[in-house]
Length: 186
Image (cartoon, rainbow, N blue to C red):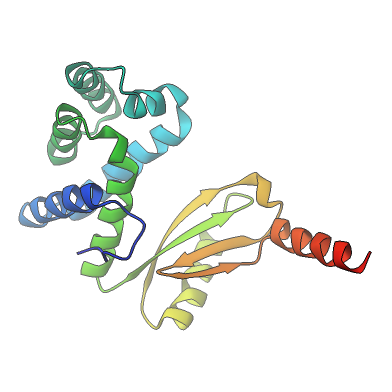
């Protein structure tokens, strides 16, 4: 199960845990994880979808219909599609990003991996991701499953979060540190 010390809400952990148990029984953990990644990408790319899951204005029924249509159109079927529909009917769509994060953590732990969140200024190539995984494996002592997001405001470098540790090598942070140091001198 996901650690209770994580910033993920209890609701998200419970739903993710239940989904993981069902996926494990159905031998479809990889498929569910892939579907959740697809849904997360859709969330990141659509402000309307984000508004739908976060807005209390929409009824549970409206959210369920919309999510069903979106999931069907995106090819998110089976266990993941049903899961999203149940979450919508239960008015818990606001917690879906946390559920996805918790599911990833649970799945990684099950595979004997540790999960790492990587934020990069630019899209990482497959070779860079492989090299990063190898470097993180030497630090963590076990295989690392990475989740990469792009944040151009970093300007360059990476921010890596593994458990409670954060490694920030971003140019943005270095420039802010330099700015602070110059203010102290001047």
